[in-house]
Image (cartoon, rainbow, N blue to C red):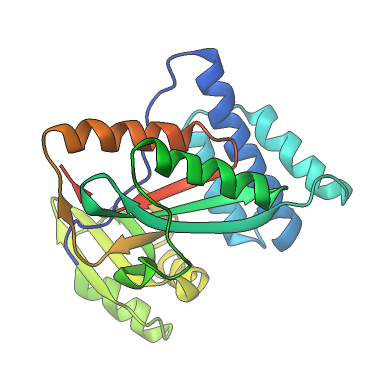
Length: 238
């Protein structure tokens, strides 16, 4: 699988408005995760992973606590997951994951982003069949055989394991996320994961260059500026 997986674009926000947008996206995701899977991070591995990721992105503790307290109250907004697919600049393939309290508005906003770069949003399944929905873990290590053995003993359907520059990368089906993470922490103790999340991994990449790069970057900025957009996955290779 190589290094084809596309990590979410992680960058330090330059203005207070950008920071507020990042905090809002995390707050919404933490709220939904806690409301659906429980507010205790020890019993909700997805929530614990999300909180750890938020802290790495320097999201303030009060933002995290507020989202969990909101979920604890049981009320609040009802957000639904929404996934949109299509072809971006340079005939790239794009998947946009959203959390929305108004699907009609969100669809219209995402479609406008496609239209602004003269591309079209597709139907469900139009590009996702060219991605693998994978749990990905990256952590320091030197023995991929020991990692594979621990995962196999836990009956994890391992897709791939890589060892490079003192880091182990594990790919598994997204449905095995909790099982894989539990197996790794049980076998190797308190691991500090560099990557610990579920992503869409492109099976093939599409090279873009020249004006396509500028258009694609503009496209990503338009999408990431939408409050409802949580993650954008693509197969573009610069």
